[in-house]
Length: 541
Ligand code: UD1
Ligand code: MG
Image (cartoon, rainbow, N blue to C red):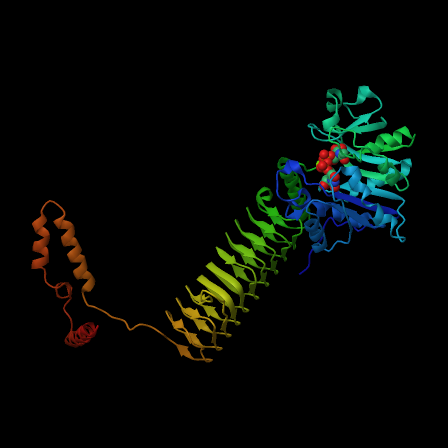
């Protein structure tokens, strides 16, 4: 399988750059049990977006500040395979205090000599690497003590406002107008609050300036916190340069503090992901209803129909067709697979050329081998369906190993659970399983065997054998017709003439005789013999 991996910047890290990510806050405004930075955006915890950018840039390493649910945040980052140094902020005393916790990461390790720091908020997942590189270029060019990223928002509420020198131009947020300070929403006067230029929460700070300045912070503000943003005014007071770069696409500046902002970020990220795959040669019949998680990869010439959801680390091959209403989570799907409407697949592997659906449920641990077919209303779990094998209708196949070319008839059930434990069913290559068969596990069916329809298999079946287990058929001539007549009689008895029904019943001949066509002597003899056998059987019962 070949995959294009669009939008992966191949530029190298930036010499002398240390990165600090703040991710210790609870995020009260989310009103959630889960730490804010762990909330997923397009299936990926928001902090990982920031960590990704950081790891691609920080030549001197990345320090991640954790606190609230620190163990979980650490675990999420470790699981992603990104290499970061974790520092703990035991009490969330503000962003300035948070950044200070990174000091040992960079000073205790003699191999690290950052000349400047990139500081990122863990709650700004839309920020792109390209923008951060530009910000670094501005910082270096202007030899600034601090360079910050700003955005002009229609609704700036909740954000820190960028206060510039020429007050008359505040509202326009003029870029050539030196930044004086940042005032937090809760501390702002009504005039300051009217400013629409906001602090995004992304900074580049001179290596020698950062930590000594943080030590001087005081929590003299509305929230009683050590604000990182106060170092900007400090730099201005020391006559140092404070540079600012304004975002052209304000989406990037979105800081997530509430569920509303989370939903907005989700919308933007999903759009970006779709654009990326469309660009890479994937067809989407209805992009707006197509949901693709951040870590999914899709091969060229694959066609996604409306309302398809691809989740987690799903890998889709080339020339795959996924019809509407299907959700695929953490699966690998080979080239040329066709998936019909309304399927759900989780943690499974589908090899090339397989055909599935509609209405197929693959629970974790399924392998569908090359060119195999899984049809309507088939549920599979921890099961392997061999190459070219078929399970086309209405089956449950759990804890099963099914060989190459086997045919699983409609309604086949692997009875894998006895109420306490699960057991395996093994079906050999080229086995023919007729319709409505139960396989009571543990059980093994040898290669090439035939299992007759309606059989309950409780014992192992040797290769090439026939197995049949059925109750002998009972046929009662004319029984159904007599029953119908009786029912008709009862229906009539409930109507206007209650006597009519009684008359019909008492007068009627046995239906078998009444409706019989004239028959040949031989046919009559055979019928009589059959009738006698049937009567004898009925008596025995
Ligand atoms: C912050 C900025 C604000 C900016 C906004 C952009 C400050 C004082 N304010 O405000 O100017 O407009 O971001 O989104 O910096 N955190 C810690 N430890 C703490 C507090 C926070 O690690 O003690 C982390 C949070 O987990 C979060 C980030 O810092 O990832 C920002 O914290 P948050 O509380 O969201 O700050 P804002 O009020 O949004
Ligand atoms: Mg925030």
